[in-house]
Image 1: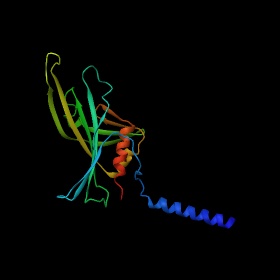
Image 2: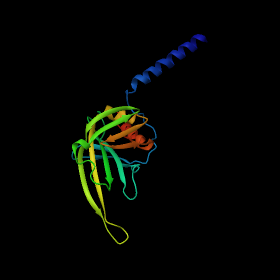
Image 3: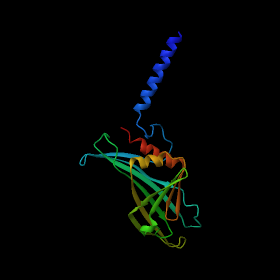
Image 4: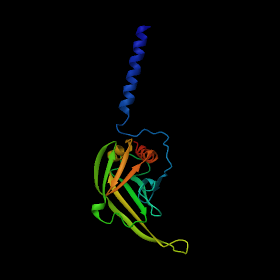
Length: 201
Protein backbone atom coordinates (compact mmCIF):
# COMPACT_ATOMS: atom_id res chain seq x y z
CA UNK A 1 0.00 0.00 0.00
CA UNK A 2 2.84 2.33 0.90
CA UNK A 3 4.48 1.65 -2.47
CA UNK A 4 1.20 2.43 -4.27
CA UNK A 5 0.99 5.81 -2.50
CA UNK A 6 4.58 6.64 -3.48
CA UNK A 7 3.86 5.77 -7.13
CA UNK A 8 0.66 7.86 -7.13
CA UNK A 9 2.48 10.83 -5.59
CA UNK A 10 5.26 10.50 -8.16
CA UNK A 11 2.72 10.43 -11.01
CA UNK A 12 0.93 13.47 -9.59
CA UNK A 13 4.20 15.42 -9.28
CA UNK A 14 5.12 14.44 -12.84
CA UNK A 15 1.73 15.61 -14.15
CA UNK A 16 2.07 18.96 -12.35
CA UNK A 17 5.54 19.45 -13.83
CA UNK A 18 4.20 18.80 -17.34
CA UNK A 19 1.38 21.30 -16.80
CA UNK A 20 3.81 23.96 -15.56
CA UNK A 21 6.10 23.44 -18.54
CA UNK A 22 3.15 23.62 -20.94
CA UNK A 23 2.19 27.10 -19.76
CA UNK A 24 3.91 29.92 -21.61
CA UNK A 25 5.88 32.08 -19.16
CA UNK A 26 4.58 35.59 -18.66
CA UNK A 27 1.07 35.05 -19.97
CA UNK A 28 -2.03 36.43 -18.26
CA UNK A 29 -4.31 33.54 -17.30
CA UNK A 30 -7.80 33.66 -18.77
CA UNK A 31 -10.49 34.35 -16.19
CA UNK A 32 -13.44 36.69 -15.64
CA UNK A 33 -12.04 40.22 -15.42
CA UNK A 34 -13.96 42.82 -13.43
CA UNK A 35 -14.04 46.15 -15.24
CA UNK A 36 -16.40 48.41 -17.18
CA UNK A 37 -14.18 48.87 -20.21
CA UNK A 38 -15.14 47.66 -23.67
CA UNK A 39 -12.81 45.45 -25.69
CA UNK A 40 -13.73 44.88 -29.35
CA UNK A 41 -12.29 42.42 -31.84
CA UNK A 42 -12.87 42.79 -35.59
CA UNK A 43 -11.57 40.98 -38.65
CA UNK A 44 -10.89 42.84 -41.94
CA UNK A 45 -11.07 40.41 -44.87
CA UNK A 46 -9.46 42.89 -47.31
CA UNK A 47 -6.24 43.03 -45.29
CA UNK A 48 -6.63 39.62 -43.61
CA UNK A 49 -5.97 41.21 -40.22
CA UNK A 50 -7.72 41.14 -36.85
CA UNK A 51 -7.78 44.20 -34.61
CA UNK A 52 -8.33 43.90 -30.85
CA UNK A 53 -8.76 47.17 -28.96
CA UNK A 54 -9.63 48.38 -25.48
CA UNK A 55 -11.79 51.40 -26.34
CA UNK A 56 -11.16 54.71 -24.53
CA UNK A 57 -11.63 54.01 -20.83
CA UNK A 58 -12.09 57.19 -18.82
CA UNK A 59 -10.16 57.88 -15.66
CA UNK A 60 -11.50 60.14 -12.91
CA UNK A 61 -11.01 63.89 -13.27
CA UNK A 62 -7.68 65.26 -12.12
CA UNK A 63 -7.70 65.74 -8.35
CA UNK A 64 -6.41 69.30 -8.77
CA UNK A 65 -9.52 70.41 -10.65
CA UNK A 66 -11.20 73.51 -9.33
CA UNK A 67 -14.54 75.09 -10.09
CA UNK A 68 -15.76 74.52 -13.64
CA UNK A 69 -12.38 73.61 -15.13
CA UNK A 70 -12.07 69.85 -15.52
CA UNK A 71 -9.29 67.68 -16.84
CA UNK A 72 -10.19 64.13 -17.84
CA UNK A 73 -7.89 61.38 -19.07
CA UNK A 74 -8.70 58.12 -20.82
CA UNK A 75 -6.52 55.17 -21.80
CA UNK A 76 -6.84 53.08 -24.95
CA UNK A 77 -4.76 50.10 -26.03
CA UNK A 78 -4.82 47.62 -28.89
CA UNK A 79 -2.97 45.33 -31.25
CA UNK A 80 -3.30 43.79 -34.73
CA UNK A 81 -2.41 40.32 -35.94
CA UNK A 82 -2.56 38.48 -39.26
CA UNK A 83 -5.57 36.30 -40.05
CA UNK A 84 -8.60 35.34 -38.00
CA UNK A 85 -6.68 33.16 -35.55
CA UNK A 86 -3.59 34.34 -33.71
CA UNK A 87 -0.53 32.26 -34.61
CA UNK A 88 2.19 34.58 -33.29
CA UNK A 89 2.53 37.37 -30.75
CA UNK A 90 1.92 40.90 -32.05
CA UNK A 91 5.19 42.64 -32.84
CA UNK A 92 3.94 45.88 -31.34
CA UNK A 93 1.03 47.15 -29.30
CA UNK A 94 -0.27 50.73 -29.30
CA UNK A 95 -0.99 52.44 -25.99
CA UNK A 96 -2.90 55.76 -26.06
CA UNK A 97 -3.59 58.48 -23.52
CA UNK A 98 -6.43 60.87 -24.34
CA UNK A 99 -6.75 64.23 -22.59
CA UNK A 100 -10.02 66.17 -22.57
CA UNK A 101 -10.12 69.42 -20.62
CA UNK A 102 -10.65 73.15 -20.51
CA UNK A 103 -7.21 74.48 -19.59
CA UNK A 104 -5.60 74.72 -23.02
CA UNK A 105 -3.26 72.39 -24.87
CA UNK A 106 -1.01 70.43 -22.52
CA UNK A 107 1.08 68.38 -24.97
CA UNK A 108 1.89 70.83 -27.78
CA UNK A 109 5.64 70.31 -27.40
CA UNK A 110 7.79 67.15 -27.54
CA UNK A 111 9.23 67.91 -24.10
CA UNK A 112 5.72 67.72 -22.64
CA UNK A 113 5.03 64.25 -24.07
CA UNK A 114 7.60 62.11 -22.26
CA UNK A 115 5.91 59.06 -20.72
CA UNK A 116 7.20 57.47 -17.54
CA UNK A 117 5.39 54.57 -15.88
CA UNK A 118 5.74 53.65 -12.22
CA UNK A 119 4.94 49.99 -11.60
CA UNK A 120 4.93 48.89 -7.96
CA UNK A 121 7.55 51.50 -7.11
CA UNK A 122 9.76 50.87 -10.17
CA UNK A 123 9.99 53.80 -12.60
CA UNK A 124 10.39 53.07 -16.31
CA UNK A 125 10.91 55.85 -18.86
CA UNK A 126 9.22 54.77 -22.09
CA UNK A 127 10.10 57.80 -24.21
CA UNK A 128 8.30 60.52 -26.11
CA UNK A 129 4.69 59.87 -27.08
CA UNK A 130 3.40 60.79 -30.55
CA UNK A 131 0.68 63.43 -30.81
CA UNK A 132 -2.02 61.63 -32.81
CA UNK A 133 -4.55 64.47 -32.82
CA UNK A 134 -5.36 67.73 -31.11
CA UNK A 135 -8.59 69.63 -31.34
CA UNK A 136 -9.85 72.92 -29.96
CA UNK A 137 -13.59 73.34 -29.71
CA UNK A 138 -15.97 75.81 -28.10
CA UNK A 139 -18.97 75.19 -25.89
CA UNK A 140 -21.99 77.29 -26.82
CA UNK A 141 -22.58 80.48 -24.91
CA UNK A 142 -25.93 81.64 -23.51
CA UNK A 143 -27.16 84.01 -20.80
CA UNK A 144 -26.89 81.15 -18.28
CA UNK A 145 -23.77 79.46 -19.64
CA UNK A 146 -20.69 81.55 -20.20
CA UNK A 147 -18.51 80.85 -23.24
CA UNK A 148 -15.93 78.11 -22.56
CA UNK A 149 -13.24 76.34 -24.56
CA UNK A 150 -12.38 72.66 -24.70
CA UNK A 151 -9.14 70.96 -25.72
CA UNK A 152 -8.82 67.34 -26.84
CA UNK A 153 -5.41 65.71 -27.30
CA UNK A 154 -4.53 62.10 -28.05
CA UNK A 155 -1.05 60.65 -27.54
CA UNK A 156 0.29 57.21 -28.45
CA UNK A 157 3.36 55.09 -27.88
CA UNK A 158 4.41 51.63 -29.06
CA UNK A 159 4.74 48.82 -26.51
CA UNK A 160 6.13 45.32 -26.93
CA UNK A 161 4.16 42.32 -25.70
CA UNK A 162 6.49 42.00 -22.73
CA UNK A 163 6.00 45.72 -22.04
CA UNK A 164 2.22 45.30 -21.91
CA UNK A 165 2.62 42.28 -19.60
CA UNK A 166 4.90 44.27 -17.31
CA UNK A 167 2.22 46.96 -16.93
CA UNK A 168 -0.73 44.56 -16.72
CA UNK A 169 0.89 42.44 -14.02
CA UNK A 170 1.50 45.48 -11.80
CA UNK A 171 -0.52 46.00 -8.63
CA UNK A 172 -0.09 49.78 -8.43
CA UNK A 173 0.55 51.71 -11.63
CA UNK A 174 0.96 55.45 -12.25
CA UNK A 175 1.42 57.21 -15.60
CA UNK A 176 3.49 60.41 -15.72
CA UNK A 177 3.26 62.64 -18.81
CA UNK A 178 5.10 65.92 -18.24
CA UNK A 179 3.73 67.22 -14.91
CA UNK A 180 0.54 65.16 -15.13
CA UNK A 181 0.19 62.11 -12.85
CA UNK A 182 -2.48 59.59 -13.84
CA UNK A 183 -3.49 56.84 -11.41
CA UNK A 184 -4.70 53.59 -12.95
CA UNK A 185 -7.16 52.04 -10.50
CA UNK A 186 -8.11 48.37 -10.14
CA UNK A 187 -10.70 48.43 -12.95
CA UNK A 188 -8.30 50.00 -15.46
CA UNK A 189 -5.67 47.41 -14.57
CA UNK A 190 -8.26 44.64 -14.95
CA UNK A 191 -9.12 45.96 -18.43
CA UNK A 192 -5.44 45.87 -19.44
CA UNK A 193 -5.11 42.34 -18.04
CA UNK A 194 -8.20 41.32 -19.99
CA UNK A 195 -6.66 42.73 -23.18
CA UNK A 196 -3.30 41.03 -22.50
CA UNK A 197 -5.03 37.70 -21.82
CA UNK A 198 -6.32 37.74 -25.41
CA UNK A 199 -2.76 37.40 -26.68
CA UNK A 200 -2.75 33.67 -26.15
CA UNK A 201 -1.26 31.06 -28.47
